[in-house]
Length: 212
Image: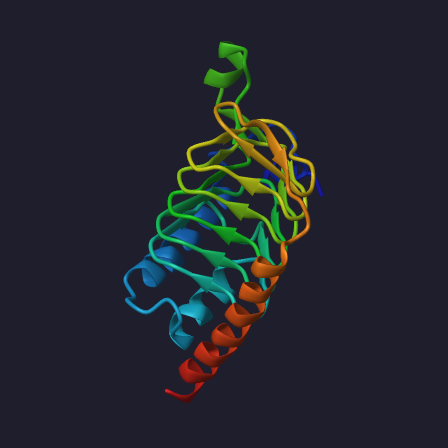
């Protein structure tokens, strides 16, 4: 398949004003408006809209309003995913997010890019690269992730960072551009005990929501 949509998803130059892509963006705007007009992110109605919008969504996910994306169908999120307020995903290429990932407010994931040559750029051609966020990643507030980046398992991205290169697993990165801060060591006994207590509280909270 060599449609503009297929070129976009493959990360090749494509015509963004293609009628099929324009209709896909319109459909995504309608669904995000439905979602953003709601008041309870954990409601069955809100989750149903997100399942229609996203390419795939795992179990026990919570996505806060408002949320914006270009297409939706190029976004896949794993189990126990949490996304705070006002995040933006430009998903011309696939955005793949693993299990137990947490995104703070105003996180921006941009797969979309443009040619450096102004003549090519003014022609309306665009290009993108996929973004991958592995399991157990925590991304701080106001972080921007640019096209082509992979963030490894268990990594932490400091608030306000601009992530321009791949982040290895179990590392803290921060800054603009984001740079290595430290390696994340195995949990201390106190932190491990707190984590077990937190999981019990979370399960109790989810049970409460189901029973309401």
